[in-house]
Image (cartoon, rainbow, N blue to C red; front, side):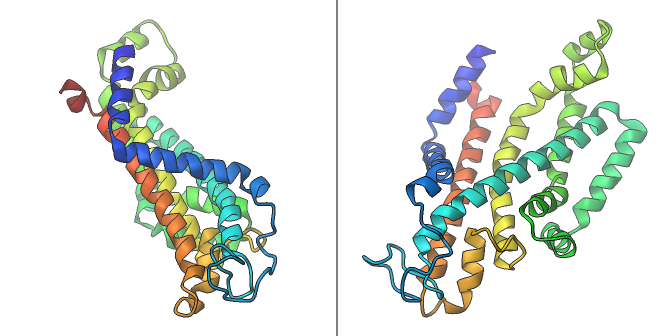
Length: 279
């Protein structure tokens, strides 16, 4: 097992695009954690003439209200990181729980849970999330739950498939034979062996969540007291041709983070691939 882990780590470290993505994500996390300390300015404060081009007065220019675009991006990193991380954790918890129960027990439980999964799967996730936020509120907790409730189906189906494949193997049968409870078999025996594809799905889910959050912010369906990259783009979209920087720089932030996460996901996929380890 340790040899496989070392080989998996070696394959991941040999993937240069994945390392680049990891480096950028580390920078993203650092800015999210310490950006408000390093750049203590208020992102909503008007500090320059509206639509000032990037230069010495404002590094990345100012928006239509005279707010510093650079300060907005730095402070928006924290909100993006919190929403993306929390929503992903809730999404994975829901999806893995439903998928594990369906795959392990099968029969009627599997049929019921898969019908529920199919119901949510046919609904457009972004539209459904928009409806939830519009009906309840634009509070950050509601946004997180709206994203999680509408996007867990992929993880559920993936987990179910892994459980169906693993639960018939000899080591699982041996656990049943020695009297292990179902909960222990699910959490301690099967789930750890099903984690590699789930980890890859979790990685990609973070990028998808960032895009969903940016879309909701773009439409003005998030907390008005919190600055986010999508909100910066949405508020400045009418000024794109006169002040390209107000939209371009927040958009590049979203692009780079999502691309970096996708590169990490590809690197993990290659590292966990037993065929590549065999080579």
